[in-house]
Image (tube, rainbow, N blue to C red; front, side, top):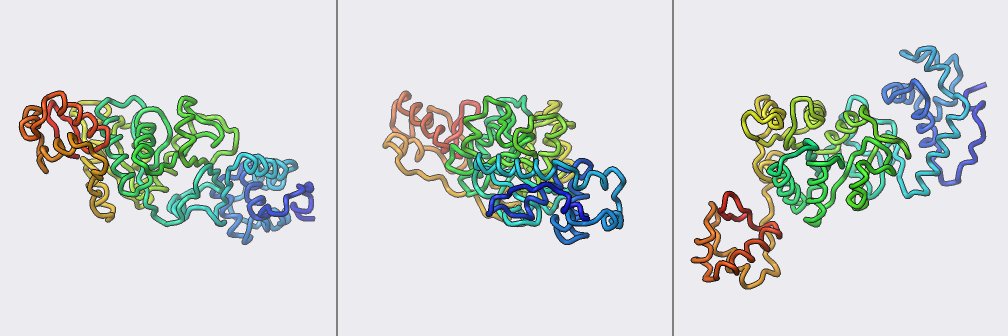
Length: 370
């Protein structure tokens, strides 16, 4: 008798993919990680065939110990898989199995792609190297780093790039929010189930993102989940930008995985001696792409230059102020007033509104076009 013969009746819905259910059953089997599951699937040709194999056939598979053999087909695992699929379906969550329709090809660059993914929101891109960029960094980011993150993420979104991050406080949240504010899309990789938003304060932000996790519904966040999550950020992006982080930060783990996947690594230079600049500076010494603006990223990835800013719906005062700013370089407020013909209050208000629209930046009391 095969292990499949001994499994309980799962009462599957007619439209349930039997192979997906079998793969999820293996995913929930103790002692079977992604590599063993994939080895079994390749050995027998499908997850269903694995569950239909006899113990004698399973013993012929290299690398399976007694614990793994006894776990395959254990009572209750198939029922749990069915319950998980039903729970996900009721919540509007997709469950994607490796090797099956919808599973992103980009993850095959990893040494150990997850056997299954849970996705809430838009479908994931199927390109081997998607038009997406990871933005990562510390939770305790400096004001300067947060400002740079918002600028870079917004510019990437306006260039049609999916901004990928991890929904954590600090750099991650700033990256997601800026991409959405720019009218773009953003994907968050989680260290918990897609129905468990962490941190809870990001619930409203998460509702506007595509959420992806390799962990089942209801899984609570755990410290060891986040390094695993970081490898997915790297694989689902054409390159990853490290904004700020110390040498042991999760952002550095993401950059390492990016290079292992054959992706690009970008780093933003910081202040000498700042512990949060130590990570990016090491990456730069090791050959990461120095990143000061969106053009550095787009050029490296072969995606052309940043699109010109859209100047629609400017007020007359804003148009005068924007025209008063040189194509390159920065000028003082007095220069803007002189060139635009406006008074100081009018010029300041116009500069503020142009800054909110992403068209003007202020650095040390000087103003310049973005």
